[in-house]
Image (cartoon, rainbow, N blue to C red; front, side, top):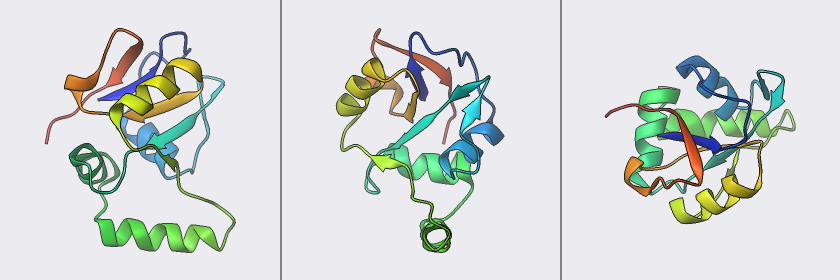
Length: 116
């Protein structure tokens, strides 16, 4: 599921908006600047997110970020666990991230979900 800070102005998001945010083609939703956070490559939730939301293979995504690097763009920051992501999202109102649904707690708000 995709989560945000409880006080975020972002109440919902479309798949296209998610893709644009996590590929850093867009930074703003509902007049709010967004800071996307990724899980590590090895996490199941990231593999599912890339497949179902970004619609990109790992190879294609890697190639995309190599090209973006030469344009001065960097991929979203990576946090190593759902727990660290939740702590970050709780403190940073602009943060948006995806984590496994079973890791969600009452300190964040779910704005999007998908199934494999």
